[in-house]
Image (tube, rainbow, N blue to C red; front, side, top):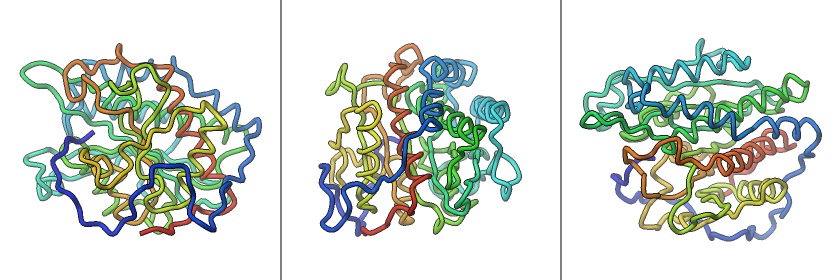
Length: 346
C-alpha cells in the first residue's frame, strides 16, 4: 500500500456511516443470487495451500522486491501470466495480450521520477449474459524493491492481494468450465506503480480497456494476509469505501460475509476524514474518482509494513483464504445478480 504522501482532497463524496444501516427506501436485501452447487464448488477452489504456494514465489528473493519496472517485477509478472495461461483464463481481446504498458513518461509527469516502463496485467472472463458490464477485482503486484542490498519481499503488501486475485480467477474459471460462468464479465487487474503513486490504476482508468461507464464495481485488495495490533488473533478484515458511492454495495458485501465465513467487518477507516486517509491510498481510489463504486479490503498497519521483514512465513494463510473467499463471494453476487448495482451517492 502507498505511504501517506497525498493531501486531503476536497471531494463531494458522502462519508461512510460505518454501520450496517441502509438508506431509507433501499432494499435491505439487494442480493438475489442463489448460492448453488456451482458457487459452492468454485468457492471451495480457493485454498490456503494454493495461496501459500503462489505467495512463496511472488514474494521470494528471486523477485527482488518487485519495484516498478524492475527485472524482478517483470519476472513476477511472467509468473502471473503463466498462471493464467495454465488455468485457461485469457486476456481482453481488445488489449491483444495480458499486458497493458504503463509508460515511463506517464509516471514521470506524476512525480514518478525516472521509473522505467512497466505493465499492468489483465486477465479476463467474459460474461455469459451481460458481457459488456465489467466487475473489476484488483490488486497491485509491485512493491518497494531492494534497499542497501536487502530485499523487501512485500508478502503482505501486496503479495497477499496478488495471489488472492489469482485464486479468484481460478474459482470463476472452474464455474465457467462447469457451464456456470459469471453473467457479467470479470476483469482480474494486477496494477503496477502503486507504491510510487497509484500509477498503474490511474493509467488504466485514464486508458480503460473497457469503458468506465460499463464498469460496475472495483473490489480492491491491498494487504489481507496479516493482522494489526488492534486485532491480534481476530477473524476480521477492514472494509473501506463500500457505501461511498452505492447504497447497495455495502449491503451486498455484508450479506456475502454472513453467508460464508462471517468475519468481523471493521469500518474504523471507512471515513474520508480519518487521519490515515486510507480511502485515498490504494488503487480503488482511481476508480472511485471516476464514479465507479469501490470496496477496499485491508488488514491494517502492522509492524512489518514497508519493512524487509514482510515475508511469506508471517502470513496467516487460513485467514488469507477466508478473506479471499469473502471478496470472491461479493464479486460472484455482483456479477450474477439480476440488476447492476446502483450508483446513487456523490
